[in-house]
Image (cartoon, rainbow, N blue to C red; front, side, top):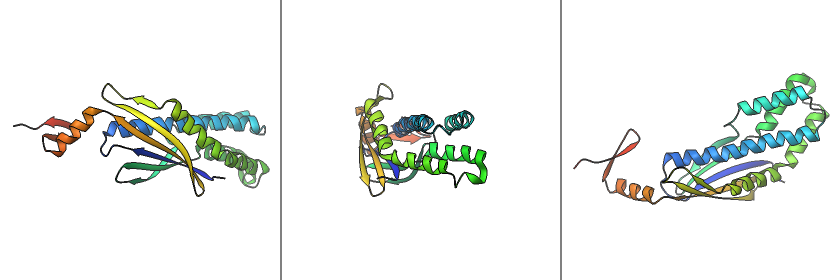
Length: 198
């Protein structure tokens, strides 16, 4: 049984615009964050001992941490691969929220052990849910020039469930532009691409 979820975003183009990298990261992050919210709802149904006040506080804290569900820790060269882990935001927030309420007794409580066991048992399911949500939205259109196709799958690697998202950029303009930069036909200034003067 996996102990954590790793996210790998693989860009199949050798050179890609920054807005494509950012858009895919934000999209995958939003999917993971939604899964964290669902996980909190499931825990609220399965563990009746969580008070309404603690649950409301946990929901509020989870919403405040939008954009923090994935923690990236590595990147590879060749085809661009960003590697991160799903940070277990729901578990962390619930641990902090209930820990504040129960103080010293929390770490040794049956409720603490039960929540950890329930969340641990759901890791494989959560990874599959993340991949399925990405697959439902497998095509992203950034603008008229950039259309992305996302191909998610789940594998296991040691103690990790790995959600791998292969990203294909469908944009002829980008390929032409990159080729022009390589031939020295354009200059790059402050993040914009300009035609070089003759």
